[in-house]
Length: 377
Ligand code: UDP
Image 1 (cartoon, rainbow, N blue to C red):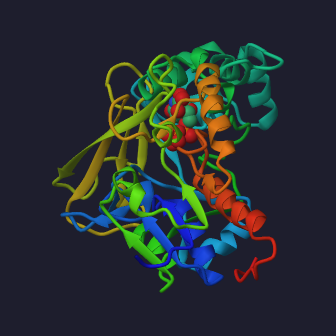
Image 2 (tube, rainbow, N blue to C red):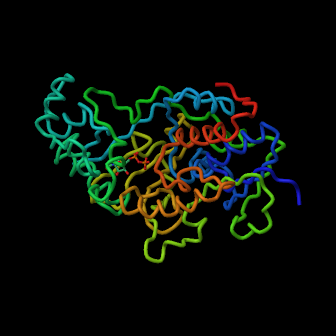
């Protein structure tokens, strides 16, 4: 067997970044990946309509972390993309996050200034000093009517839980705007990789010190790969421990069914993403990939997202019950000194792409303080 210094389970953001970092200091890295491709849930490809589509849902890169931005720029050119999302509410198309336009459209108001918007919110919000869950977080920001129209049922469809059953942090991902700003994110750097995410990841792992074994479930072969210095595990934390706490307390995950359709028309909808926060349809949103990067094709591909509890785990479900179960696995994980749990599934944390990059870079820096760091920040 070949010498392996660093064994990495999973070729998503965390696994690829750690592979790249360790390879750069001369370590021999092996990545074991269950799927038949790299890039994790960021994986994209050109479909039958000649459109770059993401297999596991749209991925919008945004960050305030200059170090992360510089890091990703080493591996791809990026084009600016300030993501916008529209929501279909009361047969109208309105911006989300809630801004002046959203309120004017839905309530036939004539708000034109930040102060008027603040006044409207003040009259409508239900204040909670420390929102204890997602429902209180939304009521505290925008009040009950917008809660019902835009958040309650979308959340039920997305999580199979009402916002009251989720941590406030889940709903706090969506801000409220006092102006006309209709961008989904307000970070300093917002962009998409010019050649797509798969190409970005190919470049990240392009190093003779990195070997990748695709279509291999680590748990089927783990006895064959034991002589490593360090193991980085990026899969679901409970899987690593053979679901030992799950007989009574199963850690929940949400998965997504992506239902793709070809439409024989130049475009299907006016925006890349349209959310359906009502009960009239079962899906949460429709993504039309052609909008990203202004792609050309005679046809267009749309993908409806149905969130489900069976299938590959995509989202941890942040609430106190799951946090308690996770803590038990975390305590086990901390006992394994040469194994590091990294990423969304291994840390059971709902974080964004840039946080995944940052966590992996920080972990490498903290473990290899004395190594020569070669990336430019
Ligand atoms: N959300 C909502 N209505 C919307 C958009 C989001 O209620 O139109 C809630 C929902 O609970 C969702 C959370 O806000 O899970 C975070 O939304 P985000 O767009 O960040 O979710 P992601 O893109 O990660 O699926």
